[in-house]
Image (cartoon, rainbow, N blue to C red; front, side, top):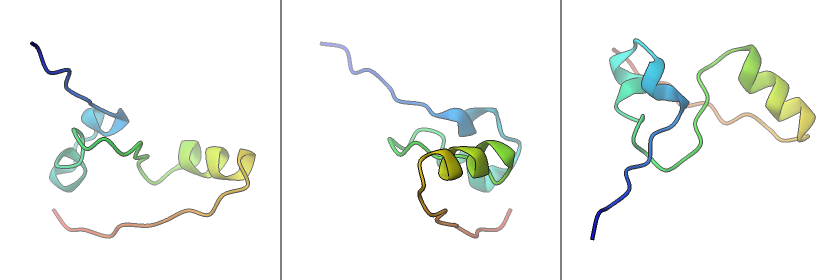
Length: 53
């Protein structure tokens, strides 16, 4: 039985901090216009995770 591996849009980021979350099954967005537009369209708050590289 093969296990399907989940990746999200963070797999294309350069930040080591963001890359460590690229296989997390949460639908993460990097800070930017795409995240703001989705939050606004869905009338949802933005949760911010601050890390360091």
